[in-house]
Length: 71
Image (tube, rainbow, N blue to C red):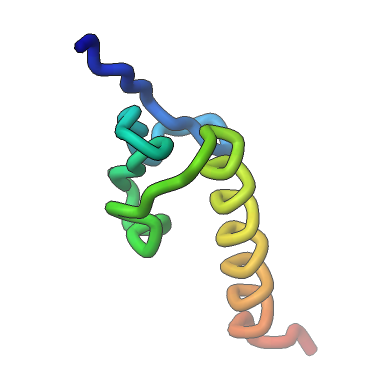
């Protein structure tokens, strides 16, 4: 069996790899920003992309809340 794997890029940088396994794709994070996805099984590669976007949006919102207000 040939292993199908590919680098996963998000926001113009590599954030992990996806490996084809029975049932979908296993994601392995190479960026701390997406560690919560590490080792998760996704049914399709597109599902990985959606989760990356969801996490990035949430992190931007949290970051914006933590920034001090300018006077």
